[in-house]
Amino acid sequence: MLPLERQKKIIDLLTVRKVLKMNELTEELDISVDTLRRDINVLANQGKIVKIYGGIKLAEPKYGEPSMDERMIDRLEEKETIARKCCEYIQDGDCIYIDSGSTTYHIAKYIKDKKKLTVITNSIPVITELMNTDIELMIIGGKIRKDEQSVVTFEYIFNFHELNVLKAFICCSGITTERGISDYNLEEATTRKKMIELSKEVFVAADSSKFGRDVTIAIAPLDKIDAIVTDNLVDRSYAAKFKKTQTKLIIADE
Image (cartoon, rainbow, N blue to C red; front, side, top):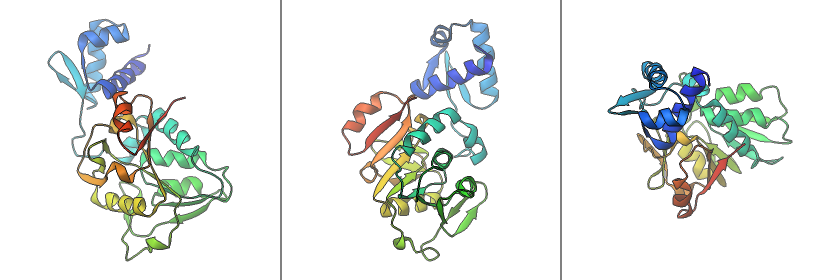
């Protein structure tokens, strides 16, 4: 296994188990302690993990949410798998909302062959991806967030209640069964709240690292969410937890 492959495996394992001991990693990866230490030093220098006594854990973002550029390449394979699963719930003729997150962006790549589809979005990358297709595009008006490549809207600018959104695909930065979904930015959260309120069905597209986090701004409790689509690295204990809620947990698995 190449160093980059091992390092990705370490991050994937930490996503599920949160904390790992050195002996667990050497057994799991079938490598020497010296090789493991080299990988750990690389990941620690990149700010992805934190060394603790006898082991390691994932590093929390130092300044809240990572940048859009960072998120676009982080967990890319998982996000594309989630996006393809979301597309199974999009039919010809639908009017859908695609949120401005790095996971929902990938949905745009897989819906280009849909017929008579209308996409409403606040994501500039989604608009760019779909610009030269037959899909009807609507971008909500408001303030441009340059770092997020998105538009955050205000009701006095855009008449939300004229929209007839069948399905909304929303991103978030945190998911707990107790508190629902949350995000770092108030303006993004406000737009998401409005689209959740207006949509007939709400799907949250979020990779497994978002579970167990309750970050700065509450977006919505789980009873406002129809389904959460995630990857197969999610801790399996969440399957039992979600059975006690009205929200369906959909695990995308290749």
